[in-house]
Amino acid sequence: MRRRLPAAIAVIALFARAALASEEAPHEAGIPWSTLLFSTINLLIFLWVLARYVMPAVRDWVRDRRLRVISDLEAAATAKAEALRLQAEWEARLARLDQTIEEMRAQARQDAERERERILAAAHKTAETIRRDAERAAAYEVRRTQELLRAELVRQALRSAEAQAHSQWTPADQARFIADFLKQVRP
Amino acid sequence: MSAVARRYATALFALAKEATAVAPTAEELARVATLAAEPAISAVLGSPLLSPAHRLEFARTLAGEIKASPLLTRFVSLLADHQRLAELPAIHRYFQQLLDEDLGRVRVTIRSSSALSAQQQTELVAAFANITGKQVIPTVVVDPELLGGVVVEAAGKVYDGSVRTQLTRLAKELTGTASL
Image (cartoon, rainbow over all chains, first blue to last red):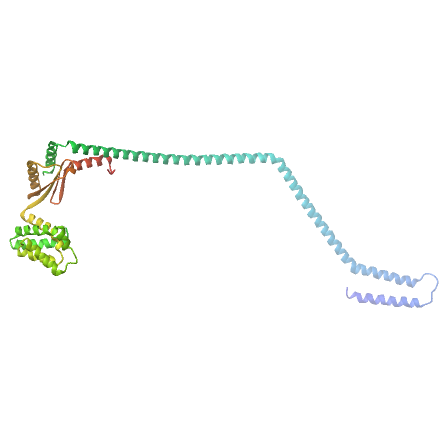
């Protein structure tokens, strides 16, 4: 394009010199052929310049614009399809909402029942442990009390026996004890 | 009884036996030990304020008081020199044991809840003479705390036939390990 530009400028300058020369000639009546020719050439040059340098850019811009519009349209179509899909999905969900709510309620009831059973089982286990511990503690207390009671009874019996021995011990008892003692120690 | 008292008693017994004066020495030792056991005298014997010279003089006075033999006088002086006069009662007890062993005797303590009749004492002495195989020298002690029966201590052993011990044993059997 750059090589053709000086040639075009030279052609324009040639025609301009011819037009000026015709301007300097005395006006004659009738059609001004030279002016018409010059204007025509100017118009053609203008049209050529437009076609050569402006139209490609305009075409590119239009093509880009068209492609962008097409892309936007496709994106809009995709978005619309997505929106329609979501709409359909949500409509379906809404249609199933009661069922879903019922399912969630049933699940919640099952979970609550399981939790209740778990808590009850744990409570039963704890209660059983407490009961066993209480039984053991009670048995221990009973045994301890029995032992204390037995010890107290024996202590009292011992005191009574001592008192009786003090008051009722006779020389015959002593003689009998010594005789028994001698029997035991004799080899 | 301390080992020191045993050593001194053994040494004195050997010397007395060598001098064939065991019985007189035992008698003198008993008397000097009785004197040394007197509270007033034992306080002086154990006093650290007494000088060695005074302690020796005091020991000789003690021996002179009972008219002790030269052997016992020297022995008491040695104890004073070694600051062992306070051991006299223990030395006497062990000397007595050595004498009893040498003569084939054993001392037996009979504790009874009431006074023993002569026949009961004789039977007990005979029984323990038979058990120990030695001549028994009895010491009878009346102890009402026994409630009934007798307890005999002979040759380091205790033979318990008292009502008190039988009642305590019975109570322990009834209560298991419970303390009374």
